[in-house]
Amino acid sequence: MGKWKDLIYKVLIIDYKTLDILAITNMLKVFDVIIDKAYTGKQAIRKVRSEEYDLILVEHSLQDMNGVQTIKLIRENCHSNKKKTIIYAISDEITEELKRKYKEVGADGIFEAPLEANKIIKILQKHFKKQISEAIFKEISMAEVVSSDTKDLLLTETKGINHELGLKITGGDKNKYREYLLDANDALNNSIIWLLNDRFDIDLELLQLEISNLRKLFFNIGELELMRSSIVLEKLLKHGDVTFFYNYLIEFIDQIKKFKMNLELELLKFEIEKPDIDNSKSSKSYIMSEEEYELCLLNTIYYIKISDYDSIINELINLIHLGKPDFKEELKKAFEDVLEFDYKKAMKRLVNINTIINLNHSDKDE
Image 1 (cartoon, helix red, strand yellow):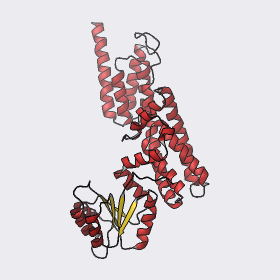
Image 2 (cartoon, rainbow, N blue to C red):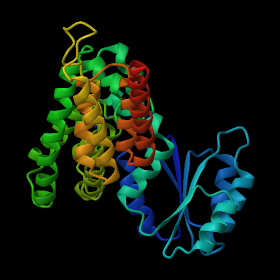
Image 3 (cartoon, rainbow, N blue to C red):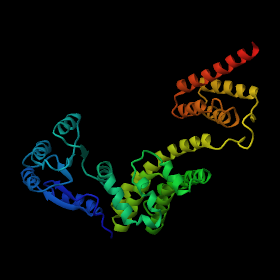
């Protein structure tokens, strides 16, 4: 098993229950971190005075002091020359009052016991994402699948699909990249059904192959968050911790479902970026006549009034690709507004366009 030495260097688990410490230790071993443990708050304080930790997990109901008191003292005794240590509390019962108390003493959060695999990975991905990215890319030898000049893009913190990366992979070919997006849309439908129906009694080799294919799919379209999650799942399977794997797989499926909805919006956005159908014609020649263009514009305004989403999208795509270039940029903004369901803003843009067209007609008549 490869070592993720760049991930987290040292974790301190503070808990008086040996079995709980063992369970958390077994989950963290997947990431090859250095694990230390303390059974009381006082023992933990002594440790943080002499050792530096990247992550500390504290059980709320310790025998000598509670988790709130322990974290307060840890914050007061941690090395001042070190970047703030991440500290999470674990409690059997969580109230708003308890959350407030932990926040006041500097805890980064609180999780309900037991601390399951998906919760641990959430902590790691939230606070150590850069280290995770660098470590996992080293482990799978990214040089085999991507040229060195795209590595910076792979390590970029991007919300949603990184189109720059996707286009880089396809050599700047927008049509090919769009095909990748369409293929991903179809493939994810099948993957979700397959994983949901068979995840508890599936052949592990087939499962590993499916996860590997998903990882490549997410890489090709520039979806870095899910690509990282895929690599974590591959790592868990190779490690042989099936229980840990299945806990995280459930969350991974939920991530895919949410992404699937966003992907459909990305494909719609791609529609308005396609080259115009009348590209080869002169700039004074349009596929839509002036009357057709104005009718299409009025239809779009009507569909916005009745909130007919699909019809609005279709009409806007026609206006953008088949109409005059004069208002194209404004129409694209209206398209974005509709995707965000901001019909009021989109309506205002279209009414303004319609007003300008009418004024132009008035000037001609005069």
